[in-house]
Amino acid sequence: QSALTQPPSASGTPGQRVTVSCSGSSSNIESNTVNWYQQLPGTAPKLLIYSSDQRPSGVPDRFSGSKSGTSASLAISGLQSEDEADYYCAVWDDSLSGPVFGGGTKLTVL
Amino acid sequence: QVQLQESGPGLVKPSQTLSLTCAVSGGSISSGTYYWNWIRQPAGKGLEWIGRIYTSGSTNYNPSLKSRVTISIDTSKNQFSLILSSVTAADTAVYYCARARYLAWFDSWGQGTLVTVSS
Image (cartoon, rainbow over the protein chains, first blue to last red):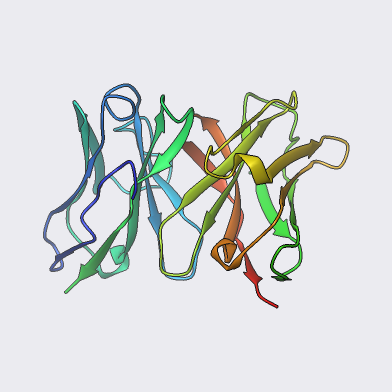
């Protein structure tokens, strides 16, 4: 049972906008910034969003992140087939004194 | 650009000890304010943080694994290591090493190495 709750799946058609939610608690999301990772099949996770809403160099601006209270969201606009992957949220948990991951959301591009 | 590479046995017998090393290239493991982490992922499942080490040698471990985990760092070899004792089949996973700039902000990852626990 992950400390962070994500929907197991999400889907959209090319060009659509999809969002992935991440629900936590006062000891993690409410107290710290959220990070998002994209994991393509058979590869290591890749940093997609850091500090809740910042994109690393090279990440398209189609990807955006937000946080409010004990929840966070990843939005992908102009969905492309190459966006089909697993997406994970991660945040420091003050109770655990360590980082926790969401269970992951598998995004399917229809 | 820093690169990380995991290495170690791909097969470990139950009750024995799993040992992995992460070699860091393209930068010094001692430079900057980074934490060096181990993360694992069982097949078809999510990511689990195992623990981290700072260049000073200070460590933090996941409480669920703390009694079996040791992470060490060798700055002369630019690498850090994971030891997980008394392994069971539940420890079968892909093990990743990763650099963290801050808390849960992992900006560089190794490619991962599959470790299977089986007799």
